[in-house]
Image 1 (spheres, rainbow, N blue to C red):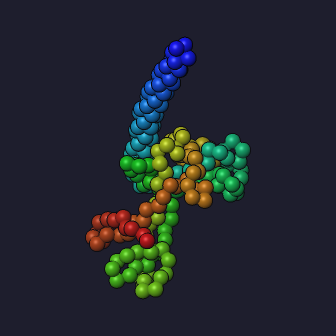
Image 2 (cartoon, rainbow, N blue to C red):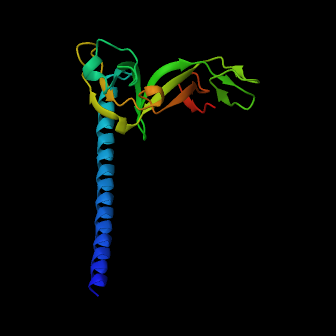
Image 3 (tube, rainbow, N blue to C red):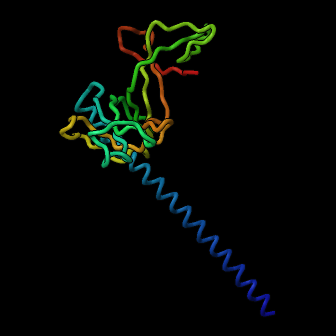
Length: 192
């Protein structure tokens, strides 16, 4: 009988522990979500200030937080953590992160208007190049220094370089000039 009571008490202890652990985990996720939303809002406010100051796409530095104290601004060689810093131009704040202009690419298309960055069989080169933008998720951005420092006087984005090949961008989007050439109208295109 004593053995039976000890087992019931042990089982009850395990059930209560699981219940408490689940609720602590749930609360931590809820707090984490709230913090992520607040962090994203703070970044959006900084982006709005930058765009208000400089109507055109402001030039910025994207700085790798893992290499900042050791290498910035004297060394910008790539190692296992990526480059120390990169230059880019701020485009906009999106729902999933901050978008930066980071290059111009040639693009090819087929008869069905499918686009590719590579020449494939049946694809022709477009007359115009496309604008390449990189998207950095809000939670990869650790801090924004709007005023910059004396080395460049450009706004600085301190970022975890977690992307493919240790880039700051999670993914890329491509923009092509729209049909109305009087207004500079760019539309996002899908690249295969």
